[in-house]
Figure: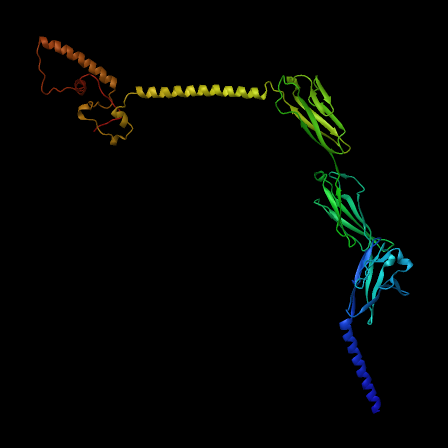
Length: 465
């Protein structure tokens, strides 16, 4: 038993030493094959199967080749030998070739890729003295979608119900395409997917919207994204909204007057589809003579008259509807410029008259103020309360008149006393007389005597105590 155990141990040591030797050789003189893990090919186009060879400095490339794995086994599709050249089987000879064969590059080009080309491909490299090194990649075939936009089944009419504006279709794609709509119109999208018999998928996205004329001419954009497309695929679609005529009348400027010539009114319409019917009528009476209608224009062939004033209507129709617009025309006696001049002249005349009136009033006030007499002292204090009025000087104070005696009575008595004094004076010339000391003059006589001028000052507002 001991010799057997010794031989087994010795054999194990030899295998371990050989393994380390091979590892050392691989590290120094080894080779490496680098390929992508997956390759996507577009149906009907060319695809490159990359294979980069890294060979050690002490190794020699004897051959590089490609094999395809099938359910029945692996088959060789391309061989490159530095000594004997390139070899490709007849079934691939017309659409497969090496890109730039060398000891470092074993890349092949497969043309016109089809669904039958889907599978696993292996790049093998044979070196001396190490042997074969290989790496595999999976080929997947992509189908680029066919993209187009179709209009909705019904026309877009202003104010109509929500309807399908357009449908964007990405047809027969593998994998399914990503489809969307871009627009400033506030609608909504509906996505539908349909599987095809060849393993592809068709994607349809409908855009629904309630039409309005305000977005006529704007565009929707269908955007399609797919791995087979280098960039996003974009298709614009212009909105075509049909609407009844929108009418405007030009030509009447509000300054039509009697005698004006070469005047006309034109009816303009914004409509989709374009308007095909224009008509001018007068609502308040018959159309006046000397007026001609040419297409959409109402033309006055003569100078305007006063009876041309009235309400005129323009009617326009297209395939959607009939619309009209009324214009009230007023024929003035004078033009606007003449009326403005008349108003300016009248204003100037009125301004001049007003200025003269103010000047006359000013002069009158000044002259009246100069001729007015100075106010008396009593006039200045006449409105003061009686208890606050200063009494006049004694020399200027008029004799008091008994209450209840009217001024006319005082004047009559004074006149009578003057006549009596004249008679008494005449009698004294003939016979002297003497008055008794006790005899006193009456109050009225004293008043008449004190006034001297036979005038009596009476102020019923004053009462001096």
